[in-house]
Image 1 (cartoon, rainbow, N blue to C red):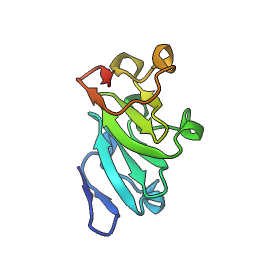
Image 2 (cartoon, rainbow, N blue to C red):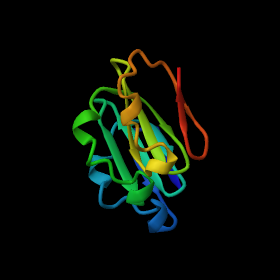
Image 3 (cartoon, rainbow, N blue to C red):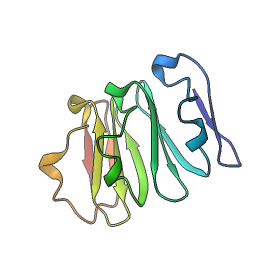
Image 4 (cartoon, rainbow, N blue to C red):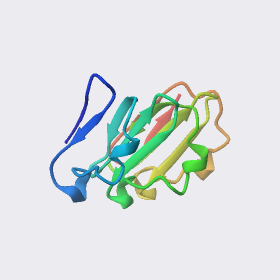
Length: 126
């Protein structure tokens, strides 16, 4: 479980394998604006538009492979095993389990995306 507090901090508890332990990223969890979760990972957008993720790496708990692209993020969406971030320019970046939407190279040309929604294993954008 994770709670976003009124002052922008995040508190987590529960099974560490499912994101219940955020100690490794706790110092980065300040000024959090939005939080989303997959089945076993969490991701947040901080006030400056960067993303912090933790939990099971195979379910999106590790965004280091796309971290350099995760700037000026305006919205996050989560499927059962991946995250999608909408950037302020309207492009989309995904990470996590490829079978849950975490691999989106075929749609990287999308621009002006306003919304991303998810099922358990896929994303759709408008």
